[in-house]
Length: 218
Ligand code: DX5
Ligand code: ZN
View 1 (tube, rainbow, N blue to C red):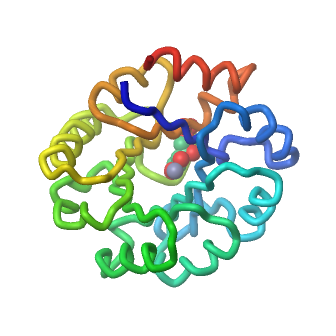
View 2: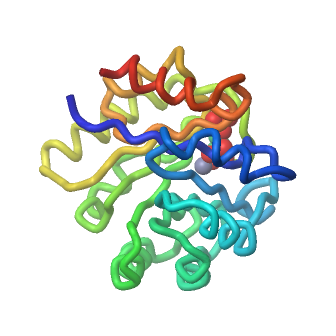
Protein backbone atom coordinates (compact mmCIF):
# COMPACT_ATOMS: atom_id res chain seq x y z
CA UNK A 1 0.00 0.00 0.00
CA UNK A 2 1.06 3.63 -0.43
CA UNK A 3 3.04 5.49 2.19
CA UNK A 4 1.16 6.92 5.16
CA UNK A 5 2.74 9.99 6.77
CA UNK A 6 2.14 10.74 10.44
CA UNK A 7 2.43 14.36 11.57
CA UNK A 8 1.83 14.64 15.33
CA UNK A 9 0.51 18.09 16.25
CA UNK A 10 2.71 19.86 18.78
CA UNK A 11 -0.27 21.94 19.94
CA UNK A 12 -1.13 19.06 22.31
CA UNK A 13 2.35 18.90 23.89
CA UNK A 14 3.41 19.95 27.35
CA UNK A 15 5.24 23.21 26.52
CA UNK A 16 7.02 23.28 29.86
CA UNK A 17 8.85 20.15 28.74
CA UNK A 18 8.47 20.09 24.98
CA UNK A 19 11.77 18.33 24.43
CA UNK A 20 10.60 15.34 26.46
CA UNK A 21 7.41 15.07 24.38
CA UNK A 22 9.41 15.29 21.14
CA UNK A 23 11.78 12.58 22.34
CA UNK A 24 8.83 10.25 22.90
CA UNK A 25 7.74 10.36 19.24
CA UNK A 26 10.95 11.21 17.38
CA UNK A 27 11.46 7.61 16.21
CA UNK A 28 7.91 7.16 14.89
CA UNK A 29 6.89 10.56 13.51
CA UNK A 30 7.45 11.42 9.83
CA UNK A 31 7.28 15.15 10.56
CA UNK A 32 5.93 17.54 13.17
CA UNK A 33 2.78 19.59 12.67
CA UNK A 34 3.25 23.14 13.98
CA UNK A 35 0.06 25.22 14.38
CA UNK A 36 0.52 29.00 14.23
CA UNK A 37 -2.57 31.01 15.28
CA UNK A 38 -2.86 34.79 15.31
CA UNK A 39 -6.08 35.43 17.26
CA UNK A 40 -7.55 37.09 14.15
CA UNK A 41 -7.99 34.40 11.51
CA UNK A 42 -8.90 32.02 14.34
CA UNK A 43 -10.15 32.87 17.85
CA UNK A 44 -7.01 31.59 19.56
CA UNK A 45 -3.30 32.42 19.78
CA UNK A 46 -0.69 29.67 19.86
CA UNK A 47 3.02 30.18 19.18
CA UNK A 48 5.42 31.44 16.56
CA UNK A 49 9.05 31.98 15.53
CA UNK A 50 10.94 31.43 18.81
CA UNK A 51 9.29 28.08 19.52
CA UNK A 52 9.77 26.96 15.92
CA UNK A 53 13.47 27.81 16.09
CA UNK A 54 13.77 25.91 19.38
CA UNK A 55 12.14 22.81 17.90
CA UNK A 56 14.44 23.06 14.86
CA UNK A 57 17.41 22.92 17.24
CA UNK A 58 16.38 19.67 18.92
CA UNK A 59 14.85 17.65 16.06
CA UNK A 60 15.85 16.60 12.57
CA UNK A 61 12.30 15.90 11.38
CA UNK A 62 10.61 18.01 8.70
CA UNK A 63 8.50 20.76 10.27
CA UNK A 64 5.04 20.91 8.72
CA UNK A 65 3.74 24.44 9.39
CA UNK A 66 0.03 25.19 9.49
CA UNK A 67 -0.48 28.96 9.40
CA UNK A 68 -3.86 30.05 10.75
CA UNK A 69 -3.06 33.73 10.26
CA UNK A 70 -4.21 36.58 8.05
CA UNK A 71 -1.87 37.82 5.32
CA UNK A 72 0.26 34.66 5.58
CA UNK A 73 2.51 35.70 2.65
CA UNK A 74 4.09 38.39 4.81
CA UNK A 75 5.76 35.76 6.97
CA UNK A 76 6.91 32.98 4.62
CA UNK A 77 10.55 34.07 4.64
CA UNK A 78 10.67 34.40 8.42
CA UNK A 79 9.13 30.97 8.96
CA UNK A 80 11.67 29.52 6.55
CA UNK A 81 14.49 31.20 8.46
CA UNK A 82 13.10 29.81 11.73
CA UNK A 83 13.17 26.26 10.36
CA UNK A 84 10.00 25.46 8.43
CA UNK A 85 10.20 22.63 5.86
CA UNK A 86 6.77 23.15 4.35
CA UNK A 87 4.17 25.87 4.78
CA UNK A 88 0.42 25.46 4.62
CA UNK A 89 -1.61 28.66 4.48
CA UNK A 90 -5.40 28.99 4.46
CA UNK A 91 -7.14 29.68 1.17
CA UNK A 92 -9.60 31.83 3.15
CA UNK A 93 -6.74 34.01 4.42
CA UNK A 94 -4.98 34.72 1.13
CA UNK A 95 -6.08 37.18 -1.54
CA UNK A 96 -3.64 35.74 -4.09
CA UNK A 97 -3.21 32.04 -3.37
CA UNK A 98 -1.66 31.32 -6.77
CA UNK A 99 1.05 33.88 -6.08
CA UNK A 100 1.50 32.62 -2.52
CA UNK A 101 2.05 29.04 -3.70
CA UNK A 102 4.60 30.24 -6.27
CA UNK A 103 6.45 32.20 -3.58
CA UNK A 104 6.70 29.07 -1.43
CA UNK A 105 8.17 27.16 -4.39
CA UNK A 106 10.66 29.98 -5.01
CA UNK A 107 11.68 29.74 -1.34
CA UNK A 108 12.21 25.98 -1.77
CA UNK A 109 9.57 25.21 0.80
CA UNK A 110 6.88 22.56 0.50
CA UNK A 111 3.81 24.47 -0.70
CA UNK A 112 0.36 23.71 0.64
CA UNK A 113 -3.04 25.25 1.02
CA UNK A 114 -5.63 24.51 3.74
CA UNK A 115 -9.41 24.55 3.47
CA UNK A 116 -11.79 25.13 6.36
CA UNK A 117 -14.57 22.57 6.75
CA UNK A 118 -17.10 24.89 5.07
CA UNK A 119 -14.90 25.68 2.05
CA UNK A 120 -15.63 23.47 -0.94
CA UNK A 121 -12.85 21.41 -2.50
CA UNK A 122 -13.68 22.66 -6.03
CA UNK A 123 -12.11 26.04 -5.20
CA UNK A 124 -8.58 24.63 -5.41
CA UNK A 125 -8.98 22.73 -8.67
CA UNK A 126 -6.80 25.09 -10.72
CA UNK A 127 -4.21 25.43 -7.94
CA UNK A 128 -3.44 21.71 -7.70
CA UNK A 129 -0.39 21.85 -10.03
CA UNK A 130 1.15 24.37 -7.62
CA UNK A 131 0.46 22.33 -4.46
CA UNK A 132 2.68 19.70 -2.89
CA UNK A 133 -0.11 19.10 -0.40
CA UNK A 134 -3.68 20.17 0.40
CA UNK A 135 -4.77 20.22 4.03
CA UNK A 136 -8.44 19.48 4.65
CA UNK A 137 -9.56 20.75 8.04
CA UNK A 138 -11.92 18.30 9.70
CA UNK A 139 -12.68 20.69 12.58
CA UNK A 140 -13.01 24.47 12.61
CA UNK A 141 -9.44 25.64 13.17
CA UNK A 142 -8.37 27.20 16.45
CA UNK A 143 -8.33 24.48 19.06
CA UNK A 144 -7.14 20.94 19.61
CA UNK A 145 -9.39 18.28 21.07
CA UNK A 146 -12.46 18.90 18.91
CA UNK A 147 -14.72 16.30 17.35
CA UNK A 148 -14.23 15.24 13.73
CA UNK A 149 -16.87 16.81 11.45
CA UNK A 150 -18.35 13.91 9.51
CA UNK A 151 -19.10 15.58 6.18
CA UNK A 152 -15.39 16.29 5.71
CA UNK A 153 -14.93 12.59 4.89
CA UNK A 154 -16.78 13.22 1.63
CA UNK A 155 -14.38 16.10 0.89
CA UNK A 156 -11.39 13.76 1.22
CA UNK A 157 -12.94 11.42 -1.38
CA UNK A 158 -13.74 14.30 -3.69
CA UNK A 159 -10.21 15.72 -3.48
CA UNK A 160 -8.71 12.24 -3.97
CA UNK A 161 -10.67 11.88 -7.18
CA UNK A 162 -9.68 15.36 -8.36
CA UNK A 163 -5.98 14.63 -7.76
CA UNK A 164 -6.07 11.17 -9.33
CA UNK A 165 -7.94 12.36 -12.43
CA UNK A 166 -5.23 14.94 -13.06
CA UNK A 167 -2.37 12.73 -11.95
CA UNK A 168 -1.33 15.64 -9.73
CA UNK A 169 1.67 15.19 -7.45
CA UNK A 170 -0.12 16.37 -4.34
CA UNK A 171 -0.67 14.81 -0.92
CA UNK A 172 -3.88 15.06 1.11
CA UNK A 173 -3.43 15.98 4.78
CA UNK A 174 -6.30 15.70 7.25
CA UNK A 175 -6.29 17.72 10.48
CA UNK A 176 -8.70 17.75 13.41
CA UNK A 177 -10.30 15.00 15.45
CA UNK A 178 -8.07 12.33 13.90
CA UNK A 179 -8.07 9.28 16.16
CA UNK A 180 -7.14 5.62 16.08
CA UNK A 181 -10.83 4.77 15.79
CA UNK A 182 -11.37 6.79 12.57
CA UNK A 183 -7.96 6.71 10.86
CA UNK A 184 -8.76 3.72 8.65
CA UNK A 185 -11.72 5.37 6.98
CA UNK A 186 -9.70 8.55 6.43
CA UNK A 187 -6.92 6.63 4.71
CA UNK A 188 -9.42 4.55 2.73
CA UNK A 189 -11.04 7.81 1.57
CA UNK A 190 -7.66 9.00 0.27
CA UNK A 191 -5.73 10.73 3.07
CA UNK A 192 -1.91 10.55 2.80
CA UNK A 193 -0.91 12.58 5.87
CA UNK A 194 -2.65 12.30 9.23
CA UNK A 195 -2.29 15.05 11.82
CA UNK A 196 -3.13 14.02 15.37
CA UNK A 197 -2.55 16.05 18.52
CA UNK A 198 -4.67 14.96 21.45
CA UNK A 199 -4.75 11.30 20.45
CA UNK A 200 -0.95 11.06 20.36
CA UNK A 201 0.27 13.34 23.14
CA UNK A 202 -2.46 12.54 25.68
CA UNK A 203 -1.82 8.82 25.13
CA UNK A 204 0.10 7.07 27.90
CA UNK A 205 2.60 5.88 25.29
CA UNK A 206 2.74 8.33 22.33
CA UNK A 207 5.18 6.18 20.33
CA UNK A 208 2.95 3.12 20.71
CA UNK A 209 0.01 5.25 19.56
CA UNK A 210 1.86 6.19 16.34
CA UNK A 211 2.81 2.54 15.76
CA UNK A 212 -0.87 1.65 16.16
CA UNK A 213 -1.82 4.25 13.49
CA UNK A 214 0.58 2.46 11.15
CA UNK A 215 -0.48 -1.05 12.06
CA UNK A 216 -4.14 -0.20 11.43
CA UNK A 217 -3.25 1.01 7.93
CA UNK A 218 -0.89 -1.71 6.69
C1 DX5 B 1 -6.54 22.91 15.09
C2 DX5 B 1 -5.16 22.52 14.64
C3 DX5 B 1 -4.88 21.07 14.77
C4 DX5 B 1 -4.96 20.53 16.18
C5 DX5 B 1 -5.48 19.14 16.04
O1 DX5 B 1 -6.83 24.20 14.65
O2 DX5 B 1 -4.97 22.86 13.28
O3 DX5 B 1 -3.62 20.74 14.18
O4 DX5 B 1 -3.73 20.51 16.85
O5 DX5 B 1 -5.73 18.64 17.32
P1 DX5 B 1 -6.53 17.29 17.57
O6 DX5 B 1 -5.76 16.17 16.95
O7 DX5 B 1 -6.56 17.20 19.06
O8 DX5 B 1 -7.90 17.45 16.96
ZN1 ZN C 1 -3.16 22.12 12.31
